[in-house]
Image (cartoon, rainbow, N blue to C red; front, side):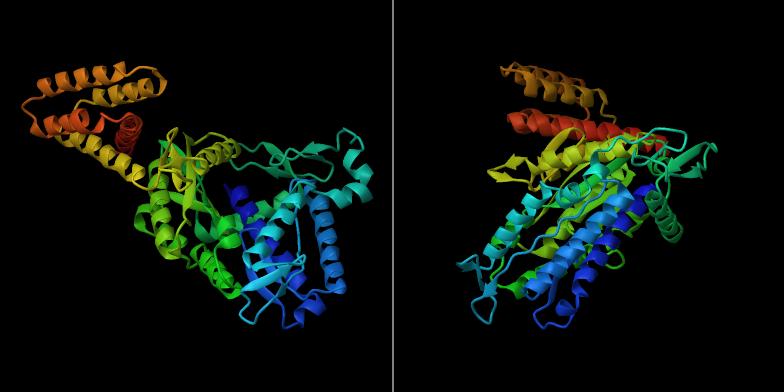
Length: 455
């Protein structure tokens, strides 16, 4: 947790330093054309004067930074810097000319994005040419070679640390040590816990979220550069580490002791905490973000990996990333993204998540207050799986039969009867609802188990 927090802080600070290095180029610093449009979350967009000397200076910074990263991080980190020459066609900065083509300002972002993507596919290209041997020479293995416990890189430069728990020696790269020390400083400042402490004997939730449609918004979402700047400032303010909306949500009593935001900035969120708290947090953040941004098509998709407190955090982050990818590719009513993946299922934030939440709460309430048998949860999960696997609709008849018998055996408990009739006669007549009710049952099962542990 400490190294994760430190690495995230390092990346954020390093990006800002690179941005400042470009802004401090003399020909850039003194120009009235210079404008810092956006710098957050490992990305920056700058407007600088277009001249041969400025382009040469930017290339120099790019080369210097690439060498620094290669030397310090052995290819684990890289940076890409792309630039496009353009000119405005009016004082309102609403239209531009790029490569002889005139269009709305979105053309600038489209060309820049394409150029940047090409660079991402050619990482370390210049270093590969200039320092071929550094890339491909066979490294000697000996007593002086140690493997960094965090990155897996073999190096003679690794330094020794001692684990707090059992005193075993571990080795890490000097650059990783700096990140760990930064993470320790943040831990001392914000007093965050270990992963097992967050899990509290239950499960750990690892959350990753990403803004939907940001690339499209930048390409065709605004009529002028000033509005791009305004949107960028608003986006950055939401993720502000001290006073942004995201961190105000985190400070609420229901979240502050049971989860931690490892990283937030640009258009990404990475958080860790007790699984149920993390799910609630994700939903609240998404709703707050949509209301705060107030722009059609801009939302947050995310995914949660639910694992044990001792599960490897790197693998947990990978699983959360896979869940996030499923949410990003989800389609609901002809609209993609704007979704959330958890407990192995993906739902749209529009309607489906609230539907699942509603029935999860009903399951929990009826079990706790009216003696509803927990067996119904497993039956709903079973029928949900059959609905996904079966080529026939026979599972629907089995569901009707089961719920009818269940109603008969609970005929004196009107709350249970009413609930089961709703499932049988209104909800489970649609195939997709089997999946959603099954998810609600799974969520309720874990919720009940979690409350038992905490009590």
